[in-house]
Image 1: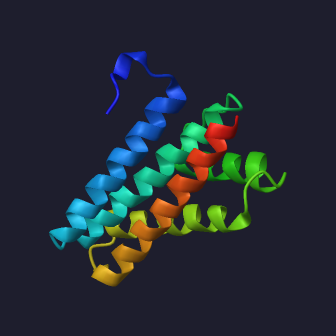
Image 2: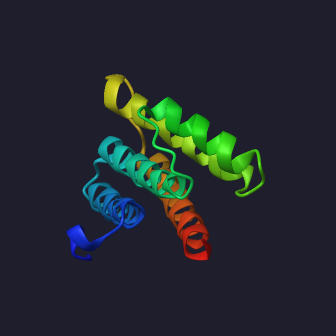
Length: 131
């Protein structure tokens, strides 16, 4: 991990995204599927925030993050639509995992969200390196 106070906002979000992904894996290894899904979502959230900072966009809500990502990167073709779907799916599953006491995600479901978060992180990091 880099020294925090020397990093740009973009770098801080990418660093946090990677940390959340590591946490998601650890939680899954310990059979904490619901919490693993939450950490996977926050990995995607911070990767998205890193991307939005490239255009000086700072949403204040999760729905704002999703809207701004779609409007500013997907609709103009800067990033493939599949990543918007990953973001929406992860946020939906995170809300369920956090608030629906009857929702018991399987290990396989959590693995799928982690895989999506890994792919999302790789894609966003590639865009940030090009800018």
